[in-house]
Structures are given as C-alpha cells and as structure tokens.
Image (cartoon, rainbow, N blue to C red; front, side):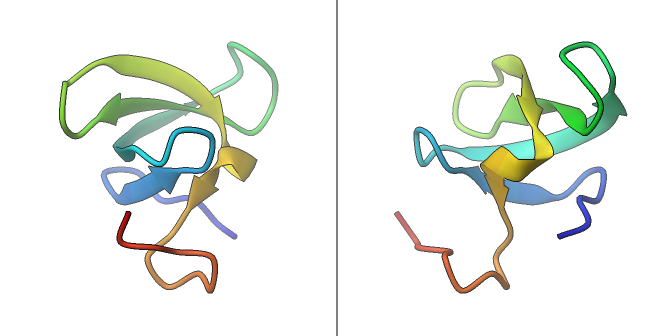
Length: 61
C-alpha cells in the first residue's frame, strides 16, 4: 500500500486514527511522521503499521 501525506489511517497496534505528515528515515526507511487525530500527539511509525480506509482489514473501531 502506498502511504500518502495528509491522509487519515488507522494505526494497527492501538487502533487509533492518525494523520500522516511526511515520510522520514528517522527509525528506518519506510517510516512516517504521524499525528494522532484525537490527541494531536506526534509519533514516528513504519508504513506497514498503517491501514487505509479502503483496506479489507479496516474497521471503524
């Protein structure tokens, strides 16, 4: 799945909604800076940890 900036995804580990900011190599290639939608907390996560709304694994939580 290709991750897009300024797009909402679900973080697989916690189920929280996040909005992507920009790609980063901070924790390794394929990582993204994201912001939690509910709290505004910034995190760095790997792109594989994100689920898009059109993904069959998406759930409304």
